[in-house]
Image (cartoon, rainbow, N blue to C red; front, side, top):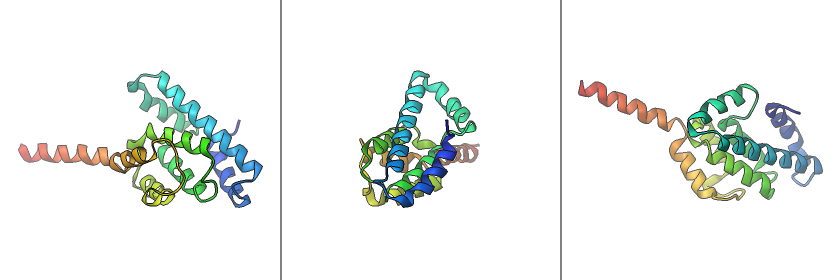
Length: 153
């Protein structure tokens, strides 16, 4: 098995061959299966265990939310019609919008400018949630709450 980080580099190297190339089609199919499996495994865990599971998987080479967004940015212009890839990636992003940093949000905005780009299930809702909750939004909100508490003291 190839580690996801190595698979990403391989995909990047194959993209110049064009989206219809059999090697790229196979890679996109493998990504889709990988995303569905990761989402399925997290679904078996309780919500309180998902974050620690993701950290463990990322330590073992699984893609982070920002890396997923980078993959979307790279693949969007070359393979916009590979539906199983985009549906699986969308489902994966739906599970982790709050983990996107500002860089991840910028990657998504580049891959899907003004909502354009490849389609996938619930795309508009997923992107809206990512833009709202990603980019450190949770930490910013928590930081604002702490500042308010400090002011009240």
